[in-house]
Length: 290
Image (cartoon, rainbow, N blue to C red):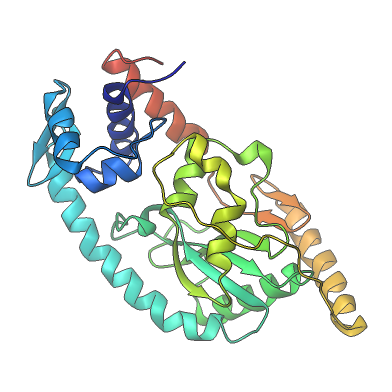
């Protein structure tokens, strides 16, 4: 079923509301759910948004009626997000020392400048082909040495680094089971902070399926051909040993991890289901199409 522009705007602001995040008009356009806007001018989009009875505005931000406090909350969290980025910039020079690290992207709330004081720093990492487990071992060891690694059992996670997704350069496309509005949003809002050789563009072009959910995000064209590994026997042996050791440790405390060739997803608390349920609840509250 095709959506009207009005329904798409409501859906978009309902989704942002799950994160207490009011949107600017350019953000409404960028994250507009299920409706393509190739030719609509910004002033015309503003008229459409202001016409909707369930949407209010303040200081250039748009939100669900009754959620005005989210504006001051967004401004407060922009400050804390800035502090976290300063910390991350200091750490990146160590994390990117190894040539196996090809790209690092900020994900989650920090990618939207919406991280609060006590939030962690979520990252996605792209590694050299066939050295995914070696890369994870090196980076996690570094963060543990610095006291910045987020362990699954940590209760205080302020400014801890949560490496919640690892991809190798030949497996940049998310698995079919991960392709939904939540993942599409995470991909579009991801902010690359380190990119060795254009892997951000390759990552985006490999995940063109996001346009089914968010058709107004910028489309990237890139070379998605696989790269031969060219690794020595010693490197392959090291990768095999480190893979076995890490899998043994992971399996001892298995919870929400997803482990596939070239793809690892770790998160102590996978919020996907909770977020999508809150989104549906917001839609039902204002009697929009479920």
